Length: 18
Image (cartoon, rainbow, N blue to C red; front, side):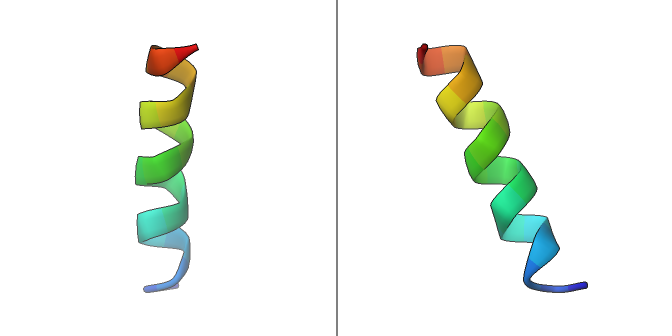
């Protein structure tokens, strides 16, 4: 679950950048 935390953060950040 700890690994999913960073993944979600990166996904949201990437979507914002796109």
